[in-house]
Length: 434
Image (tube, rainbow, N blue to C red):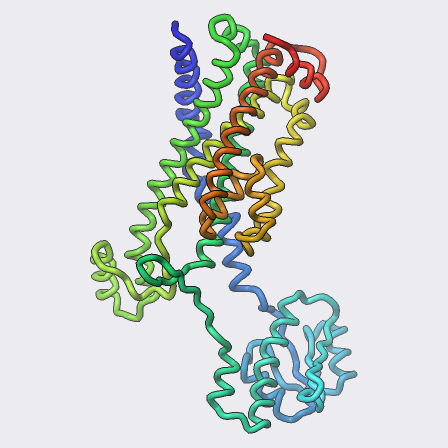
């Protein structure tokens, strides 16, 4: 049997075995849902609930009118009281009252207000009072200064800053915030997939070694063929899973473009249904937000860096798996690999805030970090061509180096049993000639 056929046989076996497994089917179905749960839902909850509180507060007003305006702003959370501070404190201690707000007579000069609680209450309690009173006091000070009503409205509404992208064809709206968030998502996705499938490779190698299956395989195929067949096979599983998720996303996007306007439309049910039916051929303008198109360059970058990162880390995970006899022994050896995956995620918020900074540029050109950070930067900003070229060259160079190192360790490790190897042992194996 030819060398290529041996590796192909191992690849095919790994792919078919894992695709047919229940775990693959379940993870493929629940994977997108899990991502939504851990990323989208917490963000939505934080956005909708930040600055909110379930506490009901009495308002002790010394000004005679600020308190009334505060109550009118939210009658569910505030109510006026004529009790003394001592009586209100007793009500708090006896749990008859959640809290009370004391508005002093000189609040317009000092801007200081006190909230009395039994302790705690959360940030939302403070932000609720600050936001409500801040608007009221600002408006009152402007009116006292005889400001024009248009000025009062302007100050309250603030300014709306939009980003405009300049291109050779002219100018167009720049969705900076969306692309930054999308870049963060892609970087996090690559991190998760590399970590997950790299771990699968390592566990697969450990299992085959423990069951002595690798000894049978090594009698008919070289260690390099076994390792690469396993890596390519599991990589194909990852690609297949991504393709399925891609199809699901496309279907949901098409359906969403038709159905989402129904929830933001004031039309009657018949008109909404007709609008949904025609949504495939018409551009919806009822959405309160815009979903921009993702440039093809972003997808190309994502695919390249995903595969480059996967093969880089999967080969190293395979080497670690071959060196140990059980998964518990691999924890110490895989620590450098794990840290190389975690570090870029820790820097991701800073880099997404300023993807063109020197820090972002340097970190994204460090090969172990490149698959995650360069993917995020490509989505978030226009990366200079020289940086893209250099990142590709460095990544490919590191990829081949990783495979060479992994092959040297794998060749000796799969047939070594008994003693748990150390980093010193791995270095010795690297120095061993064929």
